[in-house]
Image 1 (cartoon, rainbow, N blue to C red):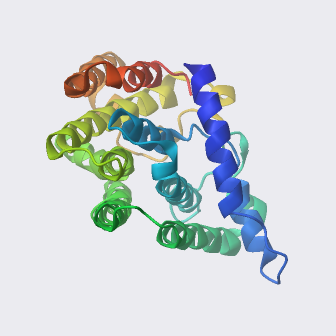
Image 2 (cartoon, rainbow, N blue to C red):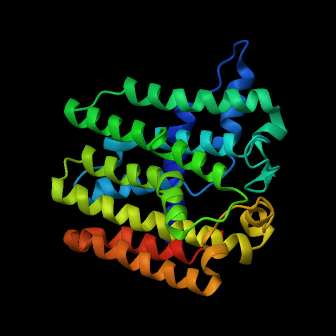
Length: 291
């Protein structure tokens, strides 16, 4: 699986490089800051999920390439802003200085803003064979990134720091903060490939369960992982008084929940038969990862 993922990451990175070419003008530093965080490493999980969902539904990389690159830009912008002193105040990301440590808070904020707007520029400049599918996909994309998606989840997460909350509250936070872009990636892959409504619903269920399992594994790794593997200090969630699955459920119960939700994710893809084989293997790979 790792070799297959690296092959896909290489293709995705070449497309991102094309869209994020540095321009030799007075604002050159903003391109450098954008590229710094985009190419600092990462799993490219959301573009890969979009790509493979599209293939499962009869599409191809070329069908989703603009959206795949755009969703990685949105994800990266969120990380830049999450790391800022006003939010998580992190100095390391993927083993490298965070954007605001490298370029300063002012440029980091602007780099995040620029990636957000660049994402929509990339999507809007491309021609799609089916305009109605493109419009629907853009709507899913925008909603997932905004106040009722990723940004909303971050807002509720910040408000909950240092407070005792219920498991349902935590699930709500992560359904938006982590889950929204994962669901959007898969649903957009299905939409652009021309999937039937029943298939789109199944894909959405898959992504929702995968997002939960992925987040729980992240919470576990923040306790059990190593700084070398994670690329950031271990225990940062506890230090920031963040609510996590480990804090609310304990390690053992959290491990059980990872298995429960990953099984549900794979079961949601049963209607696709053998076409779902890659995404099911990817699910297994993600929930046993060490970074």
